[in-house]
Amino acid sequence: MPDLSRALLHTVTLLSTMALAGCGGGMAGYPSLAQRPAERAFAQPPLAAAPTAPGTADPVIMHQIDTLRAQAARAADQFNHKAQVADRLATAAHGSGVGSEAWAAATTALAALDSARSETAVPLGDLDALQVRTAVSSAQSNSAQGDATYAAVADANREVTEIVKSEDARIAALRSLLGN
Image (cartoon, helix red, strand yellow):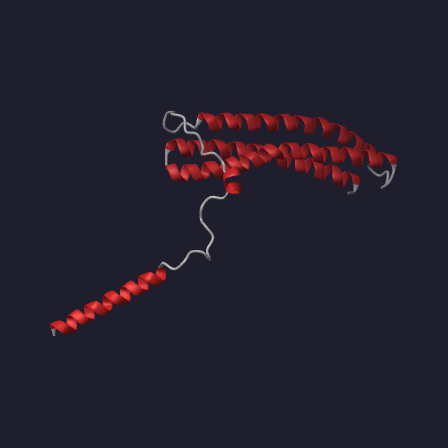
């Protein structure tokens, strides 16, 4: 019986060794999981965490938020200025017919208004990206500061989203006035 146990142990060991050798087969057919140069070039730097009181948003992120809010406010001011011109031209062109001089002037003003609206959307896109990064960072850190930072970004994102929505509504109203 001891010879049978020894033979069985020898067989199991031999089969295990052969199975493991098969698992280590060449990796030549598989791509490397190492970071590629393009991934390094477009990688976002980690969010800076300055020492602050618990539950206080990260001051570096708050500065970014303030900058993006200011950009959105400047763009909204430009939009409002161009919207006043477009309002006046669209009102004058109402009922004048497609192709008239008044219609062409109003349509050109609407195109400028679309362009101004896209300037407001730029900081919104940056806030969207910042919101995603802070959501991930907050989830990973599971801290009061991470939660406060995410909440501050989300508030700014909602604020700028409302500005863009109001600009969209104003453009739509002018287009309907022109019959576009």
